[in-house]
Amino acid sequence: MINVQNLTKRYKTKLVLSNLNFDIKPGIVTGFLGPNGAGKSTTMRCMVGIDKCEGITTFDGRKYTDLENPMREVGVMLDAKIFHPKRTALSHLQMFAAAAGVGQNRVDQIVDMVGLSSVIGQKTGSFSLGMAQRLSMAVALIGDPKYVVLDEPANGLDPDGIYWLRGVLKELASLGKVVFLSSHLLTEVSQLADQVILLGKGRILANMPIKELIEQNSTQHVFIKIVDPQIHFNKFAELVGHGNFVRENDGILITGVTTDAVAHFLSKNSIVPLEITNRETSLEEVYMRLTQSQVEFTPFAQPQVQTPYPQNNQQPQPPQDKFEGGGQ
Image (tube, helix red, strand yellow):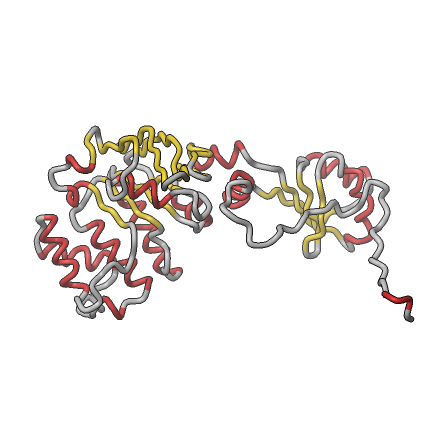
């Protein structure tokens, strides 16, 4: 288990990490989420001693700097493309293999695992970001470590690469290893991670199993498909007191009411539905809700969601054109 205690980091007068405390358990994949600037990369750099900070991180009770052979115990991937552009991928990997104390058989095994067999003799300067990510992954895993710490490992990977990465990380977790990764690909995290730590402005906003996080922050969504929804749209104003409703494609999406309440409402108003679907809250929705006040900056104003009909149930009127100078 990785144990992080009282992790705090300042850059001059700016508090970047504020007293972080969390455990990363073996046998599961733990996702590390947060907006840009939240402190995810800094946290990982502090954990392995690259950045100096207050607090302590231990790997089964030992600090990273106290490990006899860190590469054999902790696999770290913090930045892709930190390679000498004139070296081949093979020579780069062999250099780290030597540092970890493993032989060519392990190098060959890892090259095959990360899917670089056909390009392993090429110079790294010609590598795309996706190929560089795979090589960085190979370096992290070369020592067959028990702990795996990966910062944005899916960056630059195509769909096949992401599918491959998911399989590798799940396999590592199934072997009882500690797998900790940051990512901005929320859909992928929702399919991969068992546990989620959510960071905002250097503070932990949530730390729990992903299913529990979604359940605790879920909002009821019901989609109904009816014949000519515009005719019946005004009637749904009765539900505004309990939720909101908007047109969506050829139906209406209602938020904040149960499926049973919607079914009762349809029956009461003699509306025959073609489809009623209960939609689950996604990790993306929960993430946006919990981090909306945690972003470092907002590049442009966010659109305001308006109730489709005002409380007086009147249709909104189009704006009147205004002409200066009274000209016609």
